[in-house]
Length: 385
Image 1 (cartoon, rainbow, N blue to C red):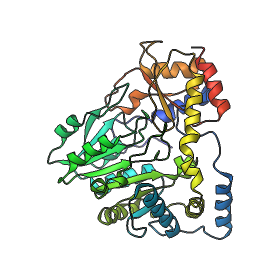
Image 2 (image 1 turned 90 degrees about the horizontal axis):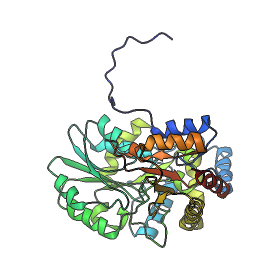
Image 3 (image 1 turned 90 degrees about the vertical axis):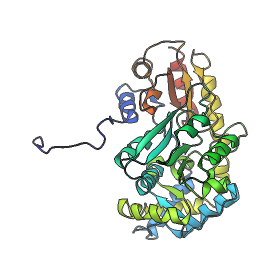
């Protein structure tokens, strides 16, 4: 096809190709173990595949209701109340989406208008900023620094003004692995009290918290919940990232606006999978056992790299481990990540990708949502650096 002579004014002129795509392609080219992109290399529970197959054969292959199939929304409501003590109306306050990233995008699109300010904490999951910019919002950044990545709530307080419309939080946090504490939630609650500020709480790793810690969901805090979109992911919980199914909890008034946008962006998510998730949610053991399941993988990977000069950063949740590589090199983190991929056969993510201004703290992120053999082999290769 000939080159287009159409004049294009990009809505995202500063956005480059995703670092996840870049590092995954590099891993494939060099036959490297891919600890870059955040997906498991093991399968989902076998019964979940059986359930999907069953519902496909039963004819659950047409459009689902726009908010999602009701039995699934009812199961989510029951789980949320049991875990966090929060009651959500399955009919008016829960929506099934085509993944958590889409839910985040739709929530931002529904709420953010020209010049509205949105506070984000960096390093940040890379979908937040483009969604803000596409909707002509103004991002305001709070930088978190290694090794503890603690939030300076006084800085957040100073950023808040009459234009502040939204604050996006993420706990457990990708890429750092930190989790919010009760004090963090209390500080956030003080800052937004009596203000017209909406919260997006990205909680896709809600069931992956380590060392006896508790997930501090916004749902536990009524004064926060009443102004929040709480977003989670079945992909993270059931090792099915390719099925792209998530959900959002929000008060009726917020949900109404969310669904106005969602109904034209997607209308409804994949039907048979929704029915399958509704069935598997009957078995609490899977999601309640994820903490232990992934903590073993974290500890195995930590042991596998114990012979390296990497300095691991405390990982309280998620399935990502960040490490300080400054004992090896002072080179930029992307160059280091590419060199490790090419020369030692293990792909990772440079954390500059999670900062708008490419802050380089000599930190790399590894995904440990992998089989034991994969993690052990990756450790052997990294020990050769």
